[in-house]
Length: 239
Image 1 (cartoon, helix red, strand yellow):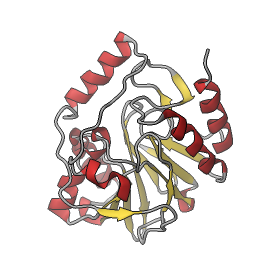
Image 2 (cartoon, one colour):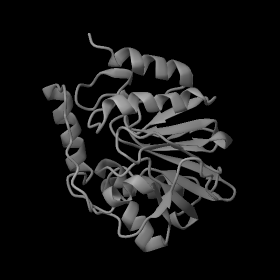
Image 3 (cartoon, helix red, strand yellow):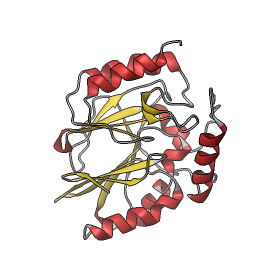
Image 4 (cartoon, one colour):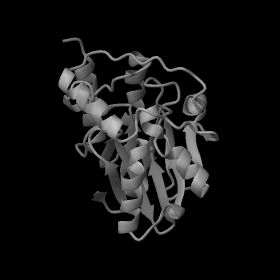
C-alpha cells in the first residue's frame, strides 16, 4: 500500500512492515511475521522490484512479531539486518522475554492471535546473524535512516528517522491501535518491559519534525509528532 512518495506499507493495522523505495534500492523497516513474505514480494513486484533490490532491513526492536521474514531475507538474499546492540541477543533468541499483557479485551486479543496464527507468528525463526547499531548512527542505506535510541519497550528499542520520506518509524515506542484492547489512537504499546522508561524515551521524538509517525501496530499517523506524543502521555495517565 502506497502511503506517500517512496513510502509503502504491507501488513495492516494489526502488524505493519514499511518500505522506503528509492532509485538506489529499498530499505525495509521491521519484518512483521513470516507470512508477510508473500505480501513483501507482491508489493515489490508491483513496483518493478524484487527482494534482491533490498539493501537492508532495520528492526525497531527484537520482538518476535517484528522478526518475521528477517532471517529468510538475510539467508536467501544476503540482506544485512540491523538491530540495536541491546536487542541483538533478543533477535537471536538467546534471551527469554517475559511479556506483561496488562489490560485486554477478549475480542481484540482473539483477533490478534488469530491473525498471528494465520501469518505464522506463533512460530519464530530467530536471526543467526545481525549487524548492530547504536543511537545516532546514520546507516548507508536508501533514505539514509538515522537511529534514535528509545529504550523502554525493550532495552534496544529504537525509532528510525528517514527525512527523505518525511517519516519516523517508531516500532512499539507507541501504538495507534492496541492489539489487546482494540483501542485506537496514539497510546503506550502493550508488552512493554519498562513502561516509565518508554514514556521518558518519547522525549526523543519531540525533537523531530516529520509528516509521518509510523508504528508497528496501528494506523499510520500524520497528525504531527508532538501531537502523537501528547496523546500517548495523556493515555498513560491513571484514569
